[in-house]
Length: 181
Image 1 (cartoon, rainbow, N blue to C red):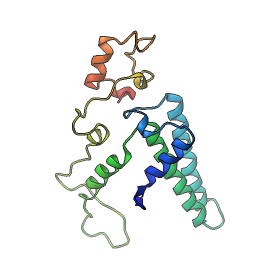
Image 2: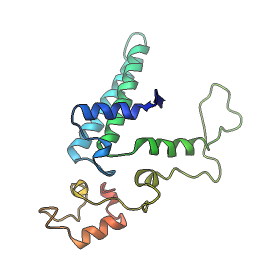
Image 3: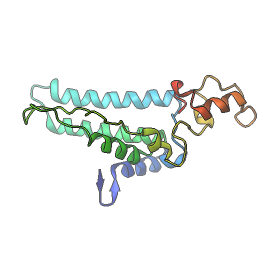
Image 4: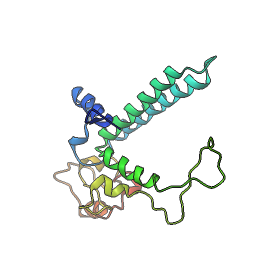
């Protein structure tokens, strides 16, 4: 995923910085606002729909339009990783390493797709990729970025109203079901 010592993630980061959009270096891994997350996911769905259209809704499949839609989908997905402060290259590496430990089942022809998780296969440790091995993988940095997601956050100013209950919730990762990780 690298070209000329830069990655596609770096390219998208340059784009995000050029236009003053949220960027991975703006803070720790976090969800953006609920509204922005809806917007980002909707944009990815639009790009996937364009790929589908290029393949299935034209009289003949259009490879150039399909390739353009795939590149746009990756661009928007990487931009979403930036918006969320996700260190994507570390996450990618963890997923890639886990995927490379999968196997092809016996009996599949050369043209058939298919890989399986062999016995003992372990999924990638995405939490460690997000927050690094020096931090407990079940924690996230609790700040105003998790307020829209965490039901235990009291209304009011962040600096004035940090509650012990919320700090405990975030420290133990118990607000993960609401997106607070």
